[in-house]
Image 1 (cartoon, one colour):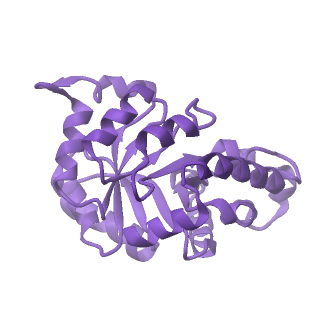
Image 2: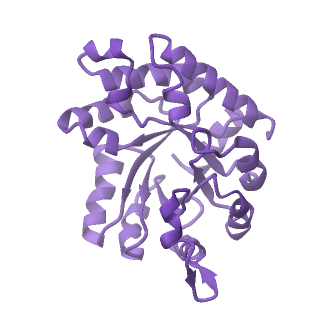
Length: 266
């Protein structure tokens, strides 16, 4: 999916909502565990309940890989079930030497045809460039994250700037605002405006809203641009809003709530 197509979806739905399908099998409603593929049945119900107001789905591959071959089957079935006019993200956080990254890119852009994949930039340009060779595909590069350990490296000085600032500027030069996004944590409220000033055109994938303490209003006010420019990810706050037979209805209620908060910015 290219940038203009993504922008069109955002403005059509008046939403920048990304639903994170971090589907932990230990947290599924008990009645689903009797199904042949409980993870897919859960995801299917969540997608049906949320797709009207959602512009992206993010599948955190760790929750599928942990289940072995069954998990990969669930992931593929989920990816195939997502409507084609909704942006898809493989949250795989890959990043390795060039020839290995080429295989990772093929995995998530060909074998499993996601629109994008999250990438760790620590090993430099040759670990990111393979993901930029695919037309209408995106590398979503870790920029400024919201976990406590981010201070260990991202917030450390590097010359006359902080490490995350150097990473953002450097990685941006490897591609374009049409094939590189950045992960920018929503809980870094004081830095959202600064990062947007540094990168006025790029899309940001923004986790940390909801369970982690970030809020829609702060993120939208400080990071939206003329194309929308952000995907606000909510995982647990939507998919595990309920844990009984009404879980899909509860997920729907939450997506409606988030979309209403976002709609005021269009």
